[in-house]
Image (tube, rainbow over all chains, first blue to last red; front, side, top):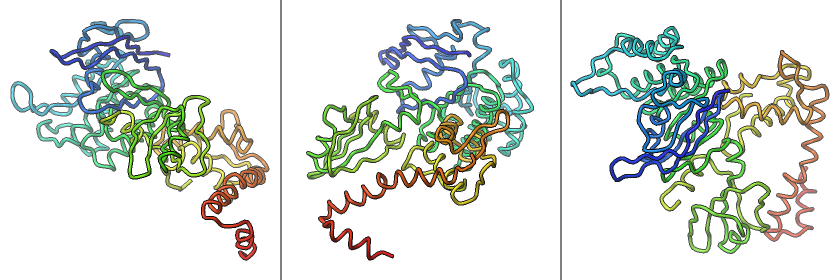
Length: 290
Length: 120
């Protein structure tokens, strides 16, 4: 059982504090979803976890080994990043197979067969040049590299960006199948929360530079409720319970709650209690006023 | 196992209810193997842990049992068992909701009884 542990990670870009003491433990054999608003530092965190970006303070350890400049630890990690179509030298004219070549050197367990099979499934030729690709095709290459890296802990940053709905569903199935077959760990960041919610065994909400929560997705949704009704009735039901995302309309109001262990909603004869989707919960917790 | 997953309930509860429905409808027969956690995960593109949670509910209630190394099977008497369980929760799930709504609308006991008696 390998683990990746982040301890008190801080990171600033010039005056802007992005990560303010991130603590996170990634356990093996799970698919994690990393969710956070634009600019909250998801990519920064993921690149720090894989030693591609130095933190100002804090540590990242894989199985007790520091990952920074440590080949032995990094051999187990893969961060498949977005491919740029332009480099500092102009157009990026590298071919897909060139990327696979580089990956084969970088990842000790690289599976070239798998990489080729995946892009064939996506309908991309290995001779295709990167600067001739659409956003969706670039995502497919990042996915192929991530899956074929066979790394114990594989991180995909917004892998479904630009993919159409059929390709997205294909990706979720590929991911689940690969995870089942190998027991590898995956961390997936995404903005398309709703459709991926069922794929994640655990979700991590990154908010205001910190990990707001990290929890089993099903258990989290079980304790999330949306309550609507007459003002006083809603207050009565939620007495002593922390409420989020209160919205008022005339005499009615609605709130979202996350019930703690053993906590129960109060009695009322007339409020509507509904389950909350992961997307709505995220909005309630991390939205503007959250 | 052809239903569509909805947002209205927890996914694992929907998985367990779908298997129960398939048993009640004769889609899955007693002593027959049910789809594995892996198969369910793939069919619905859901996390295997969630699928396993749905299966485990049915194992705990005795509807399914595990044959080591082969998979999950429908227990003998499962259909009867599910019917009994559903009858037990019928009051909580349907009768109570019916009465709550009737009270809200100011329907009297007599009126409600009358409606039920008239039906069928």
